[in-house]
Length: 93
View 1: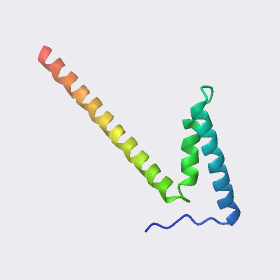
View 2 (view 1 turned 45 degrees about the vertical axis):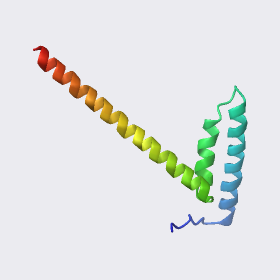
View 3 (view 1 turned 180 degrees about the vertical axis):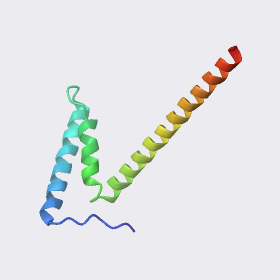
View 4 (view 1 turned 180 degrees about the horizontal axis):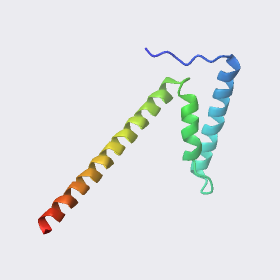
């Protein structure tokens, strides 16, 4: 089992929780209002709350894994596209 982050002072834990909850509320409200984009508040809220909540931590890990998979897929597609472009140029010569 992973260790939780130890805070140098208990006040930092309270500050982290309160700011994470406020950002979460702002993100949820921003998701409903067309003026404010909610994801700009939700991402920092999840990152602040992840050390304190097992559910949020799992969600953050799942999001990071999906982003890494997308990046590697895009890199492979770009590389495959370059390789095909090179082979077409060689065939035209």
